[in-house]
Length: 606
Image 1: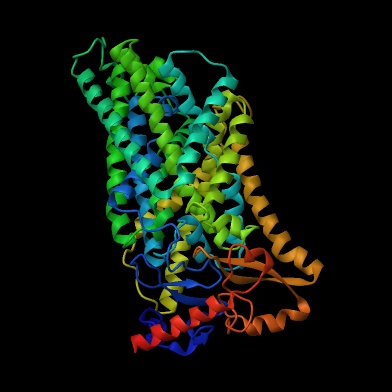
Image 2: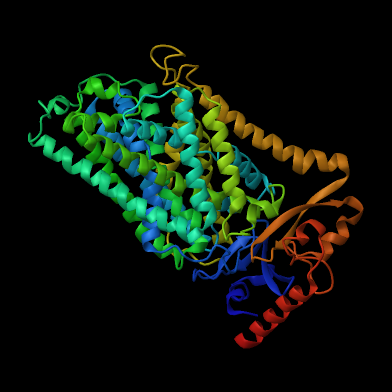
């Protein structure tokens, strides 16, 4: 047996250790079964509950994510449309420039605390991509498949980037200097998103290289805005009174509870990409060390640039004009400083390019999340979600994201699309963020009970508690109505529509689970079990299968905790080609080779 499967046997009190399948050690804890897994990303062994998606020993997507790429995919996802489109709304909601700047600092504190929670989870499961989908799966393994199904359900439904695509289109029109209709705006948004989709779908290395290049442009653009803002403050431009917004900066108005909550949501949206590197963990060599260092760097860089960019806006644009700007705050800044010139249009193009880079980064990260949902076996047609054929990219998740984004660009009213979609995506995210932070304590407790190794990174308790409190605030306060009544929010319809929609999605997740896993199987007289699936491209997955009641005892006696048959060399189980996924035909020769390689590995380690 290879060395990385031994730690279970070295534990104290190993009387709950049993050997199943291919001599793989399993630690039982009531109904839970923990197996040790290791991948090729130099992360060391990890201990995970067996009902979760299996670890891919060799990543089908390669190991092309290094230090620069970690910083770039985080920066590209954070710096998209938020810093250019939300400052006016945040200023309006907070009612003063001083409080608005404090909110951007609060955004950093919130993100840093949540980053620590994610990093501790990553240190437990350092060979699994997908981020939150993995951590919820392992924090709440029972009821079996409930959280994988719930998270997969809402992730698929909300896996669209229409808000960013719409703002990108707005800046493209701004740099062209032409007016547009609602449908022209939607057409440009669709075209831009389709180009981003083609880049990431055709080649993984190209998509990372593109993301890196655009991240550099994003940073340089914000550096330019920041420096220009400091020059404006120094009185060296045509701006008449650059200090007007900083006088009495905390007494310019009285914020409302609704306004502060809305501002916090916009802040959360602007910082939301700080977790993107956790979505590609299995593509990173030594991921915990790399993400801890480079993920922190990306968050600090973005925070500094966010604050300086807001200072620049406040220096160059009168408060009233900035509040009325809605989604084009940066364009107003450029116009007030440089006038109506080609330079302004060029800078608008850089912002549109920044938005495009955000679309690329989101596609990369969320495709891994969707792929991991598919690897859990809780989505239909597992081959569609997990296969990297024919281009070496997760084409299925990319297609789903593209399709849903196009629908969400076309469906909502153009004026309300950005605000509603931004808020809708944050509310379920706050719900799962609360469960994630609480789940970290559950994972710690279970691992301590089983005497499993301590993580290489452990979050401060104050960071976990702060994350829990922020999530609770984001779940409760959106119910508080705006001052002007139920239709005086930031959209033209009822202010809490996004809250009800988010709750409906969460409830629908539970109903879907109850129907698929509990109600329908009992009516149909079968039960759901998981089965291991390995495609010919190396992709590994679970698939959920229906086992008739009269065959259930035999199935449970012949399959291990991972869903593999105890002797896969004798009959159909684990290793199937992409063509054989549909037929269930076994590749006995490859399965036998798998067993032989395990045997040789065991001998060599003795």
